[in-house]
Image (cartoon, rainbow, N blue to C red):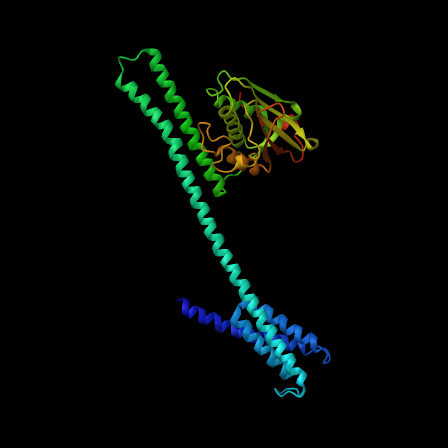
Length: 367
């Protein structure tokens, strides 16, 4: 199939070259006879167009036909291939040389472009393969650990029903619950990441108070936050924002989980919000009093499978990537920085286009 196709492309290119020379010749007939330099340049422009569009062979044909047409129509004696002035021979040679040079140059450029396109495809495939391997490695490790703990706890409960006391049984049951919750979070992050990459994640925004979605996130993380101080500071001028409640709850869950994972249990987590840009947006901060982000890693932590401190237990390095994707779906942005007092500060902005609506127009919350 490749052979006949190449022959057909070559024939089409030669035909296109002849058509281009015909069009250029028809145009140049309107050029004054004393401006032969302009005629030559127009012919060479036609060669460039053919070389870009139809390739090396077609441009060579266009070069030869251009010289022939120039001799036949624009040099004395007209309508003849005879040459009275020897200077025209030099012009023909230069035209032919420049035409061939342009053809060769465009051919090299196209080959280099094609090679760079194959090389990019190879690099992309290598990158995809690395991502797949990283995903498989992360999933196999992070899913295997809680499954092993659950299996061990269940085996202990089943194998020592009579020997275990109430406190020990309760400890095993709590372990099973904690690890099942961890598994649920891992699977949820994988599903969210799949939605982001497939482009099926869409934010269904409506005006509502931030306090409610923060409360949902804190309730969902009640076990992890047990005994840990959390301060919420959301003023009335920053409360009402348009957002997708389900997706925004996921952002807060991921950010708070991240703070819990990388900070000691007794340290404070602060959640605050304030209007910015004259009220056109709300800036939300989730901050902690932990060790902070390593210098130079402030942007890297939002990449897939990235972890600020790899030695910290838990997570697949997808939480912050998901946060960024959700904020982008809200036409917002998220970033992180280290606090002057110590600890990490994750901040994101949500636009409030048109300003906040009056309170009476907001949807009523469930009783």
